[in-house]
Image (cartoon, rainbow, N blue to C red; front, side, top):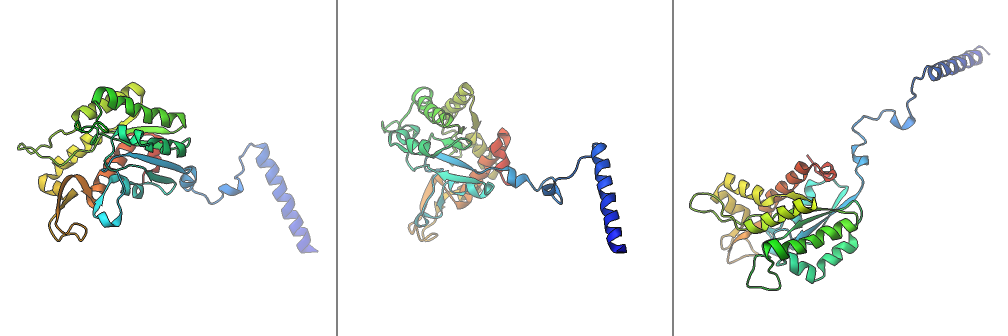
Amino acid sequence: MLTMNRAAGITVLLLILLLWMTGCGIPMMENEQIGTSKNSNTEEALRPITVYLVGDSTVSDYPDNRAPRAGWGQVIGTMLDKQATVRNAASSGRSSKSFIEEGKLDTVLQQISEGDYLLIQFGHNDEKKEDETRFTEPNTTYKSFLKQYIEGARKKGATPILVTPVERNGFGANGKIKDSHSLYTAAMKSLGNEMNVAVIDLTAKSKALFEQLGSETTKELFLNLQPGQSPNYPEGVKDNTHFQQRGAMEIAKLVVTGVKELNLPLSRYVLN
């Protein structure tokens, strides 16, 4: 009986305390907040999104039988939170024009959804004057084709991001990288300004990286292999446009750095 009276007394005291706290306006802690740190909800706050990539061979995925060749789009997913899924639609040999005319942009726009992102890098193949199926003029047709990517993404509620073309490995006698995309880079940046689209200047970032590393180290980022160095390239290869795995990783790092610098919501998905 004494034990029951003591329990009842404690219950009454707790009720009185509860009523007093309520009357004083002291906030009560909800059950789900108990034991939860302020930072533990960060991952929950990141809703699932898809990051679509469109571009050329410097962005593309490659099968094992072409290793160590790799595009930056092939590896960038390792630098993003698991809530961000990367869909790499980039295709070797395509320009902003041929990608559209082959129906590849339509396929992406059928899949992309509100809240997703579309990263757009073209330029290498747009420069090929000898090929009318791919060539675009920087300040006219190049910009007009890029507009279709931007408008298509926005129509679906997605965010377009322009990425200027990554530089080639081409050092001059002065130890500086030769500009191989200058007109197209300038046109893309101009379009970004006109249409209020974020632009990652990968041309400038890659040029600065290569010059910092120097010609010999930069050569190792590209697909330059000696005979017998890789079973997939028994005769060796000299390619100063496409990357090895290490090079693809370095370029992808520049892209995610650009994403963080833009301070868009996508930057929250970039891993430290």
